[in-house]
Structure formats: structure tokens, C-alpha cells
Image 1 (cartoon, rainbow, N blue to C red):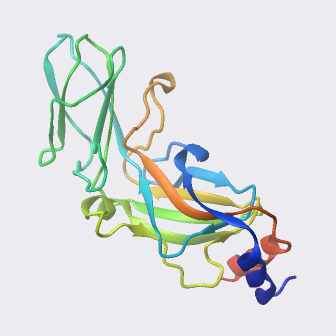
Image 2: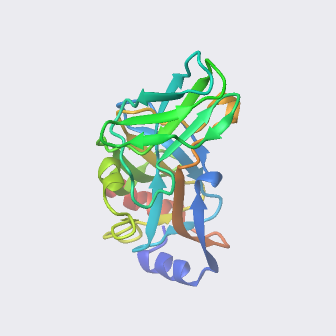
Length: 240
């Protein structure tokens, strides 16, 4: 097996580019409420380094659905199932999609009472709502080897994140173990969440998606393979 110094030198000299790993590159999955679930995953086809000390985005909204009433064109107020918060740094904390109409701007949002008011010009249509929630929900960023050896590289409380000013106090990688942010080829980067609310990435046959969701991880992407990297990082992850 390559030594730590050999791996360190190989990482330092391999050609690489600064990039962002976005949700659009990841496989997105619904969660199981109340259980830690993988909601986004990416398998590296080249070595990746998560950038230490750099902020990242993981805005994952809660999901609710309703049926509009039988009177077209009237305002309807619906109570959301979880704690609605006006998350700082999220451009649209509440997104409403009405089947047959499309995305609509809410008539009003009452954060104190966890309600959203909207108008369906038609009647009896499914309504999909994505919103930022203040409920406690454990967020974990994990790298996993092809053999299933995991190592958590960051974690936070999604509810607390949504309640704080993310411009001043963003999510940020802060590695304190050697090679912690290094993800070898064929390893996965997983975003996991243990939340009391549903996470849904697509409804209405794919027409409705959470436009307020955002995943963006700052990375270095290597141009070339690094010999021995997978087994070296695997041995570290298995021993920590």
C-alpha cells in the first residue's frame, strides 16, 4: 500500500480543477420519514477533494400536498404539517405548484401559524408545496467506499441551519483528520437526512420539482487517477 507521504505528494501534483458538485449531477431520492435516508448521491468517476474551509449549500425542503377546493379563483389557506420558517439565504422559502396551472406565487405566507394561501383558477386539483422547515433534522455528508466503508465528513441540524443567517453562518467543511475530504474514484458522496417530514424531488409526473432546493458542494476534481488512493483512504476510513 502507498504511504501517506506518497499519497500526499500525488494529491498535491495531480492536475485538478475547482468546481461545484451540484444536485443536478447527483441521483436524488425521497426519504423515509423519521429514518436516516440517502436523499442525494454521486459516484465519483475521478478522484475528488471536498474543499476544506469553503461554504457549501444543502437546502432540502419539506414537502406537503393538498387538493384545491371546488370553487375556482378563490384564495385558499392550508396548514402545513411542519414548522414553516423564513430561511435566510433561500430565495423562495415556499414553492407552490398547482396541477393544471403550474407554479404560482403564494397569495400570502404566515410563518407564525405555518400556513400558505394560494389561488387555484380551476377546481379540485392536486397542489404541491415545498417549504423550509425548522423541525430538528440531522443532515450528514458521507463518503462511502465501493465495499460500503463509510466516513462522515460533516453534519449539521437542518432546522437550525434554516433558522440562522446563512450569509453570516453558512454550512462549511472543517476537516480535522488527514485526507478526510478526499473521495477516491468509485466512492460515493452521499447526502443523508433524518427528518420528520417528507423529502420529495419530483411530483406530477416530473413536472413539479422543488425549485427552492439547492445542493452545491465545492470540490477539486482531479484530471487523472491516483494509484493506490482507494485502498489507502479505505484503510483510514475503516480505522476511524
